[in-house]
Image 1 (tube, helix red, strand yellow):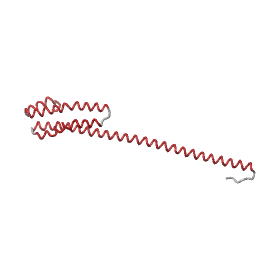
Image 2 (cartoon, one colour):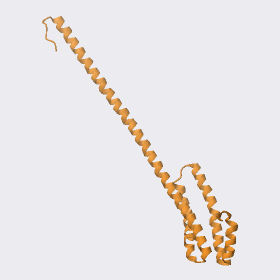
Image 3 (cartoon, one colour):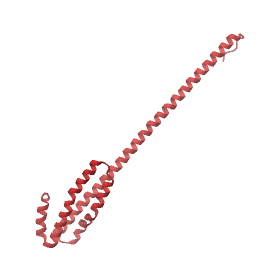
Image 4 (spheres, one colour):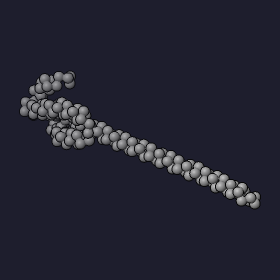
Length: 168
């Protein structure tokens, strides 16, 4: 602060200019503080939104992985169905029917579990298409197994060739 000059008018003017300079500095400091708080809040909000986006993406990836795993189970079930039926038809040993019978028992449960993990309408329609394509395989395999049991290998082979032309 400036030294008093002894002249009251000049001393008052010097004091007023000192107060004005101080309040200007305080306003600048307060403005800078407010600006830094606003910037910090903006960065925090942006970080929060990015974190939410990443969490949602992680949930979607997890859900997709679950659907893929469930689809692999359904595929394995269909393979077990056909493998068991073929093994029985070729050998006539009922032990080969275990994967076939197990697949028949698991199929509906596995489809239901898969259905629970799908939320997209288009994927649900595709699942319905898969189910419609798979159901006749169950009936055909059962007919082939029954034919092998009652009429023998040649009849089962003939039925297999007529029902499954793409397998040759």
